[in-house]
Image (cartoon, rainbow, N blue to C red; front, side, top):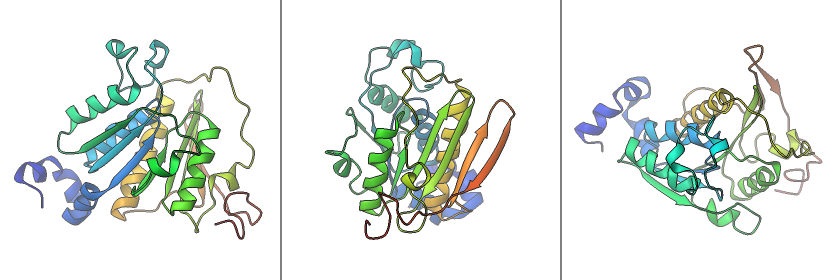
Length: 244
């Protein structure tokens, strides 16, 4: 049950999808892996929406080169752990939610523990090694994964439902080449991060059509957004026949 203050805070959302859906948001536990360009807008808007528990996972510290796009961090945060910097802003934005900050890098050894009990995983990572780990742990745990990635003016997003949709390795069986420095304009992760947050809200509340079986592609240069169909692959090394 919400207090009068809570009902007032979420009034515009409740008018859209009702009190029960808002309560579902308040009970939800979402893991966001990455507190950088994508993770910052995802976390900020999920906190504003009233997600009950947000778990931030990132092993990096804030660098001045991050500040053109990682909007929860400021100049005074340089040198701090990204998860601590971001968690403080989220708690200030919405003191009614629980924010758990874990300063570590996701790998095959700790991934299952980090996502244990989560209702949803958000891939806001900056490399495919971590993304593949999240994909596989999501498949094993049966927990949906909202993927996002950006480069330059371009970005992509999709929602993966284990056992029902193409997984990340169906769509990208081979990782793109690793770049020493990935160029990116700050608006790109903002756009893709908000799409990811929107997917999370829709999934938790059961509202609208998810980006399942579709890869959304954003071209910021042309200001176009398209969706491409994606299908499960029987020979997928992660979710193929007999693997999950």
